[in-house]
Amino acid sequence: MSKKRKRISRRRLAGQRVLAHVPTHHLETGEHKPVTAARRYIAEGVLMPPALVNVRRNEHTTDKFFWGEKGLFSAQYAEENHFLFPSLRSIVDHDLILRLFDFHLQHLVCEVSSQEHQLVQVDEKLGSLNVIEQYLTL
Image (cartoon, rainbow, N blue to C red; front, side, top):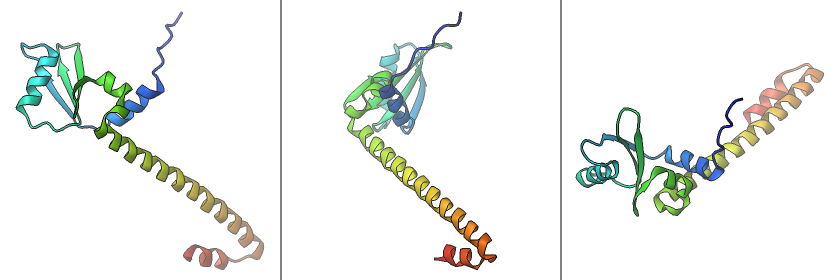
């Protein structure tokens, strides 16, 4: 019997899409705990929020952190609560605008293709391509 896969919540899935637009930094823990290594890396470098920090604990385990304007959080918390972070909210708004634009563009393409289909049918009845060429140049 196969094991049932755990379902990821829509909210977390939306957060993953948002965090995909955030720059990611990779580092090793060294002798420190993962969160300490992440905090030291942030203190040393000029790391502007928002940013993801992947800390490699060993060859099998990697801890992910989100560096936001409010501090350092686990990446999972940031995924689930991405709407609480102002820097991520601008990414969400930008992504929403792009999705709306894509939707309208697809709708427009469907409208144009259906009109072209109608014109081809009219053209077949008239026996000339002049009607289509004049319509498409407008």
